[in-house]
Length: 89
View 1: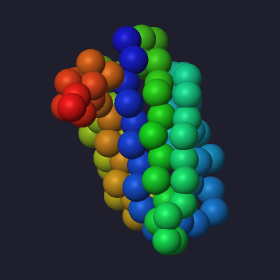
View 2 (view 1 turned 30 degrees about the vertical axis):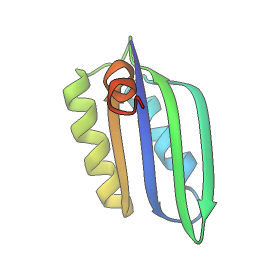
View 3 (view 1 turned 180 degrees about the vertical axis):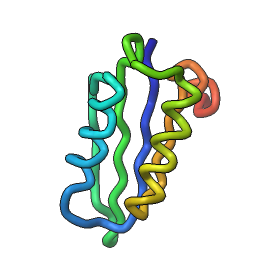
View 4 (view 1 turned 90 degrees about the vertical axis):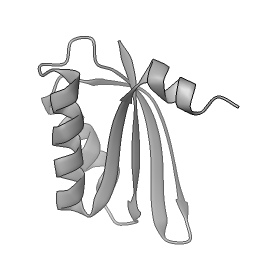
């Protein structure tokens, strides 16, 4: 199963490293990543494989939200099919 991870917050050193390290601890594999900095704000979208994640998806969502808050970021995890349905034009 795939999911989409979005990360938004004030830019600083180490965001990608910290988010990827946290995902790796849950056995989540990053498949694709796109990031940019706009007027001092960091934005990133990642396609990830959660098929062998070591916690249920709902727990991953909660844990990544908590990790994001601790880093001063908004981190959201959604199943890919739900993300696509929400962003369909």
